[in-house]
Length: 201
Ligand SMILES: O=P(O)(O)OP(=O)(O)OP(=O)(O)OC[C@H]1O[C@@H](n2cnc3c(O)ncnc32)[C@H](O)[C@@H]1O
Ligand SMILES: [Mg+2]
Image (tube, rainbow, N blue to C red; front, side, top):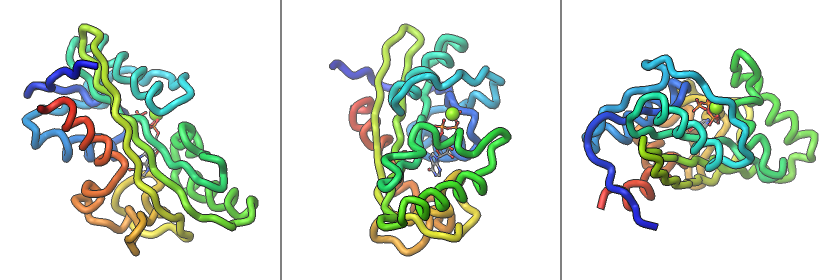
């Protein structure tokens, strides 16, 4: 596939998650991109009807590129727990209910781990970053970080499931970690590295 170069300018972050907006700004603004979020623009939140991270990421970026006429970047991500056969996976946000409560979502993960025998606490975060240009060109990059789940939750940095996730080789949770350090090892950073290698030659 021929990649397209990502040129400096305005980039729509097609997400309604404030934690992601913050992290995507940290990653993309140093590249000379002006990151404007779907929250800032009051864009509609599309229903995530696909069955994969990449599929849902593409659907969100397409919707934003079509509405704005500008290149759009989206992120579909989630926590995938080994003993739970990959759950919550693409349903990670939906496990938090409406309105979202990640205390509830984290407690459900712990409860289901216990119910499944608690014999394996390994998990990974997965991230698909999709770039869609207004003329329909699209690219998607996936990243992962492997780790272990802890209980009770620790730390109030980060977002979502960060307080129960300890990356391999670390002792503190993503919720306790300095953002720059999370950006050096996260699933989002892994996908971002691949995106940069492909789109910023
Ligand atoms: O769809 P958008 O608008 O981007 O926002 P969302 O919060 O609904 O995002 P997803 O559909 O991709 O769901 C991803 C879920 O996984 C969680 N998640 C993703 N990345 C994470 C990270 O770096 N740390 C902790 N939790 C994360 C996040 O909190 C969400 O609940
Ligand atoms: Mg979502």
